[in-house]
Image 1 (cartoon, one colour):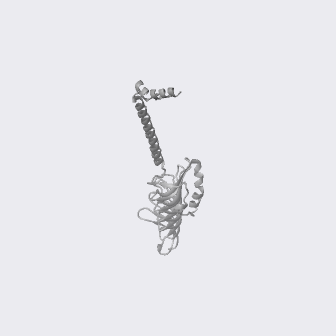
Image 2 (cartoon, one colour):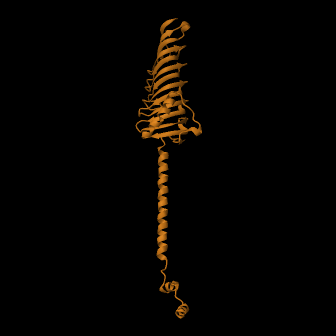
Length: 259
């Protein structure tokens, strides 16, 4: 057998396309699964391999890119559907390894948030930048296991433009690991929250509490001083007289005799 043909599996999966000698499904073709999902593109020994488009009818996800042995592998882009862990409508384009985002890639969410950087095992991992355009914020940092980890820089509002150059380098895959002594003075140690608002709010609350405590202490000191001043006895007329220098009668007599 050689040429175009069809092949139907017992579970209802249907293949239409090139069939090589000895019934090998290789070349260009399409596959339709019983749930309505489809694939169109390159086929090798019955596997999706090469370039092709897969549409998942169950979740609405669409992948257009490279395949190896039935897995997303190489370069490709994917519009996510209602799959677990990823909001519907999110879009990724970049590198894949064995069905997972791995290498350099860009992820865009429907909210407008964009991440550009490195991935490992389907998670943000390595140097990357995440932007929140609707908030005017940019976070450039190292990532590990999908969380900020290590040194980074969080820019707010009009300061966000300062991170654009580094973001462009990361987007092109040309990033530089800065030595500790070369890091920008604006860099800070990034914690494990991608937004960092909680840390900022906690810091502000601590500073406010410290100022309040200092003011209360100052008021207490002033009140104690006023109380001590009010309780001090006034000097009696006898004490005032004793403290006033008196002219010696003898000295006065001598002065009179001298004159």
